[in-house]
Image 1 (tube, rainbow, N blue to C red):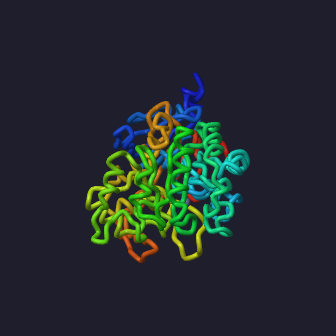
Image 2: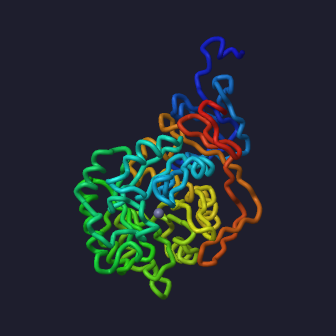
Image 3: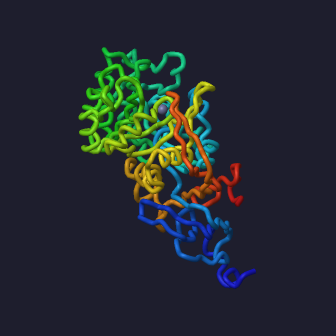
Length: 397
Ligand SMILES: [Zn+2]
């Protein structure tokens, strides 16, 4: 038994020693130890005595970042045919917060909130779908806003208001299989109404829109989210000549969030490259993780950070778009997305693998990079939740 234990017992629950912390939210990039206590970050210092912690993991040579935040995923596992099991797909990637992007609507989100999400250690938040049943019947009805009777803006707003800290906004799918040219504007209007009534945020799917993209963007204000922003479908953010559409630049300038929601089919490498060359990198990086057809590659967050780094973003910028930035979008910047003492004890530890890595998209473009973030362990609420390929039990290290 060490001196510290004899005198006071350990003062920290967990310490990670020897790593390099990269935390864009607090402008930190350097060799630091970090300790956690009661679910929160307790200390960051050049050296923390392992004897002061009940458990210590030596992470010498590894990269420590705030737990990644996936702003667009589908986690209503069992509630919709395409939603995934959160812990397996988040904690394994260094993701500690997953935001469900409209898998449920006001008529069925309680099952997600009370039964599905509590079965996971990942912090799970949600946007309600403007359609009452969310994506439950997506595979049967193909999106399901063709019958406008499924939209009730008042009830949607009431439920968002009644769930602060859990529901953060309202999602609408502007995709030809969900809405038609005749009701797309009406669906946007109703969503805007629900968002304004609840004082929340609007998230709109913009891949494969049945109406011109600029008409969709007109409904968005500061803090609203344009998700799948870098898709390669006809109504993309680029003109036919590959220039950024002026309405897209205006939207970004007024604070509309340009979110990736990659999914394989919704993020075209050539669109990303053109946008980045013209000064529009993604505001936030997210997965749109879901169970897709077998030929679809849906990357997890650690691979997307690596891919966008390979596409030319600095590692700091790619991490900012996956940590402090999505935290700000949710208004949770005081709680998550950074590792300042007092904030949530959510962190990721990565091995920076060097080699030749290739990521692709469904349009057939490849991106080659020399560095890949490989998850070593994930800390959730001050406890090791995932380590070297497996989920851990509470209290295990
Ligand atoms: Zn989605």
